[in-house]
Each structure stands twice: as structure tokens, then as C-alpha cells.
Length: 431
Length: 133
Image (cartoon, rainbow over all chains, first blue to last red):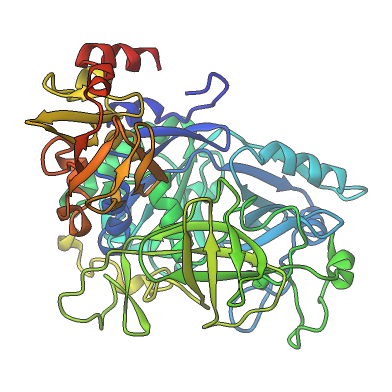
């Protein structure tokens, strides 16, 4: 471990569990446990995985100017962002968006939670709490909004996979009530016992909890925010409740392969110091219906309007599990052999495979009998020329060249948006 | 991650700095990666091996091993001709994790220079190297 690396309150637990550790975002974090990243990845598709994600940073914005400050700095239009009808954000809802520089390049991506009319929580990536706090303060101007960096004061556990709700039913008080009306990208409760919101979700050990129906795997599940002091006993309690369901501690390797297969970007790798355009995540921008302009003003809007020759970011899927290494700048070549760009992410989704011209996952309801996938390489490329779904390109590192296909989506039949009512025990006595 | 005391490092094999093991079998030498290497790499999902009949110098790359973490080169602990490769790894690369010194072996080599065997580290010398890492 690097001397300068920070640790989460579960660092000792990871060590005792035999995890392989590495520094990520300034924190010494588990890459995988003795189970191995492949089984961890599969557990999240078929059962449940538990992740220590306390390296992620949290901030709050409070005060009458909070909404306007976020409208100014965050790409999502908070006045039209919920559901098909694009209604305004409300208490208990959260949205994904980007913090841009004035030149349209990405500082970080984030999820913004509305805790109250004048109170918001922001979750950004590891080590980014300070920078985003400074950024928001710089742009507060005359607005009445107070920004607080909560870095290292919160603990965070992700429970992801189709059995996540059933496991949490065993550790959350009045779970039947809590799990009523909790759509994807909504939350309940609060991590601070002094908040009136904290009554809404309590663990059986009485720890107050902010329970969010979000995650970074593409699968059904929750993110649990709590005071850092409650992290260790809550982790043990969930493991205990999940032991009959095969709950599997998962490290960052599985988190990476799961998110790549779910076409979710890694900040500072798939989005970064280039204009946030021509990528699969433009739903984070406040476009009008015709996609001809933005419906609000925000930092970076002018740069995005006038940007020229921005490279195109596309998801790809390979034909077997071999990947290229992005450490030695893997490059992309078109069918004529011309170099057209770089590989941003290349991971292996170990739970998918091709049958004919279709990709199936081990969780696909209509998968062929005896389907035993070996995995497919997948990820994102950034190229100077426009490509279309179905196009073939070669990605090449110093060692090998692999043919891959541009795709709209990678791992099929993901569970993230499944109705919660289908994912819980129906009767008290089943818990 | 395994502590050094937890690693299985058999005394009947010799070791290279790049964490390959080598074991004498008559005139030939069987080669694979050791317990430390497989533990560091994590789940091994693909092994790329040479053809029987290929010859390599000591230190040359003879293949790659792909884990969830990375693709890593495999280096010859000694020079020679490949006389057999472990074809089981094509369908079961996880054998390298499960039994690195048995079913997870990679190549069988006819050495070109016996002196190169003598240069390989004994178990104790290799453990000293690890302690220094």
C-alpha cells in the first residue's frame, strides 16, 4: 500500500478477508476477495454482491440558492428531469448528471439527491469532494447556498443484485413500508440522526440510513449511506442477513466489469478533459425534445454549442474474452487499417457470450440450454470518425489486435429497473 | 492477498524472478507460474501458449496469461524447445489458480543449456526475493 493512501473504516475487514488490495482514487481498496472477481461479477447477476464504496465523496448544498446553484453548475435540468413527462425533481428523488468546466470538459459525474426544497446531497467520485466543493463555491456568487464537503464522514455500502431487497428486508425496520413506492433513482431516509428524514429508514441496529435505489452495476440494488461510525457493524449485519442467500463481498474489479457491461462511464477515463458530447451519456444534458438546443443555461453550455470536431465515444463488444491493455494506450483502427482513435475502457464481462449474432447473459430468461459463457471483452472507444452500431473495428495494444463490434448496448437483460414489488418477499413470514 | 507464509512454494521446483516455476522431469523441464503470481493476478481467464516445436531463449516471452486485472507476459526461465503444452488450459484456465504446480502447468521444455537450470533460484532464494519485494 502506498503510504499516502487513505483507507475506509472497513480496511481491516478487507485485509482479514484476504482481499487483493490496490490504490484507487487515493484509497487502498479491495480489487477482489479470495472468491475471485469472476464469481463476484456473476453473484451480482444471479444473487447479491456487497461492496464497500466508502471511497466515494459526498457533499451537501443547503440554502435558498441551492437549486439555482445546481442549475448553474450541474448539467441535468432539475426543473424537468423525472420520468417520461420530465417533471421537476422532488424530495426523495435523485438524478445523474455532470459538472462541466466552462470549456465543456468534464470535471466529474455525480448523482444529485433532493433532501428538501433547499437541501441537496451530491455524490461524486473518490477524491473529488474537495474539488467539486471549491468549484461550487466559486460559482455561488450572490446565491444563498452553503456547500459542505462530507468526504470521509460518510460510510457507503452497495448491495447489488436480484436478491438485494430480500436481504435488506432482514436488516431494515418496517421494510414493507420502506420498500413501498421506491422506483429506480429514488431514496428514503437520512444518514444524520438529527434529521427528521432519518426516521423513515432505520436498521435493526437503529442506525439511520439513507437508502438509495441506485448503483453502478446495471443490476437491481441499493446504495446505503450512513455515518462512517456505523459502517463496520452494518457491513457485518448485512453479511449475516445475506449468508443464506449467498451474498458475496465484491471488489473494484467486479465493479468495473459490471459497469462496463452496463454501459456506464468511469469518470476521468470514459469522460474527461474533452467536451462532453458525442457519447452514450447525453441523457445527462438538458436537451429540448428536438435535441436542437438546451432548455436551461449552465456552465459549459456555450462551449458545447460551438464545439467542433469532438471525437465520438462508442460502446463495443468483442467476440471472446480477450482484452487489450489501456495502460499502454491501446488504439483503434478502421476496416481499412487507418488509425482512428483510442480505447478508453476495455474490460471483460464474464457473464455474457455470443450465440449467433446475439449476446446473451447468464441471467437472460431466453438463454439457450446449456449456455455457459466464457465472457466477452467490452468497453468504450473514442474515435475521430462517426461509426454505427454493427460496424467492426480493431483495437490494438502492444501485444495483440482484437476485432470488436460497435454496439448500442452490451450486457442484455439487466435488472436495475425491475419493479421493486417483484424483488421482495411478499409475506412477513418469508423474511 | 496471501501473506508470504501462506504461499505454497514447493521445494522440488526452481524459480525465476518473474515468478515462473520450473521442475526437472528426466531430461525435460516443466514450467508454469507459481502461487504468488496466480494470487497477484487473480482469476485467470485465458492462457495463450506457444506451439510444440517452437524454440525460445531464456527470458523470451513464450505466451501470455490473461486475468480479470490485466494481460501479463510469460517468460522462459531457461531456453529450449517446447515439447508439450498444457491443452487443458484452453477450456479450464482456472486450473492455473486452483493448482498452479499440477494441472495448471503450462509448457514442457527440452533445455538447450543445462547451466541455465543451475542459475534458477531454489525455494529459499526465491522466498528471500519475495521478502525483498
